[in-house]
Structure formats: structure tokens, C-alpha cells
Length: 134
Image (tube, rainbow, N blue to C red; front, side, top):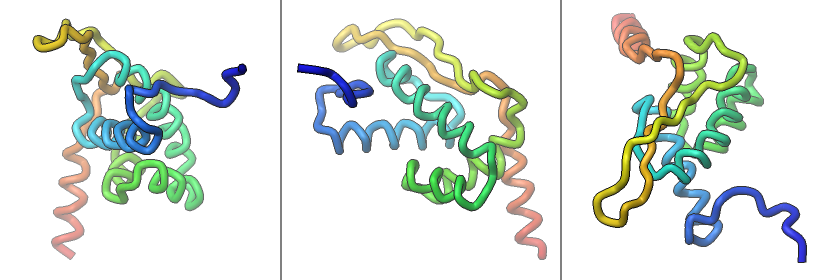
């Protein structure tokens, strides 16, 4: 028996449920710039989100469509490509994970995942106001 082609964690779920969980966590991370979740989930979404940010940095039509397809949310993809990515000055290592203690109920190890660089989302609000004025 081999283990070729079985990348990623299962999270005790079926494949489609685990995929939906990862997509939801990535969308939340992009919207709020920082989330607290279990350490295993944080490590898993760091890998996928960093690849997504690198893809979004290309800023072509094809890369935009791929980001939308991977996130399944157009607004979040637009936020990532138009607001967050221009503020990132790095070539890799966009996210950091900090240990946040243990969860009270089941003593699961928690972690906070966030962007290394400070992200200013007020840029988006100013752009929305300018569009509204015209």
C-alpha cells in the first residue's frame, strides 16, 4: 500500500467536507486578517493560503479566475487581489502562526494565524466611497 497523492489532513471528515472547511477558513482569514483555530487547521490553511496569495500576485485574468474558483467567493477574491496583495511586499512567508494556548472543552491546541505584514483594509472603504461619489 502506498500513500501517493494523499496530501493534506483529513480532520475526521469526508473529502468534500474537509475541502469546504478549508475554504471557509481561508475566506475568514482573508476577510478578518486574523483568526484563531486549532493548530492543525491553521497549519493546513497556511499552506493553501500562501499558494493562493502567490497566485493572486500575478494579477492576470487567469489567476483571478483561479483564485475565485479556489475560494468560491467573488467578494473575498476581489478583496485579496485588489486590497491585500498590493500591500504585501514579500515574495513568500506571508502568514504567521502563534500558539494561543489550549481550548477549554477538549484541550485542543489552539493557534492564531495572521498576516506577517500589517494590512490596511480602510483602503477598500475609501475606494468604495469614491465609486459611490461618481
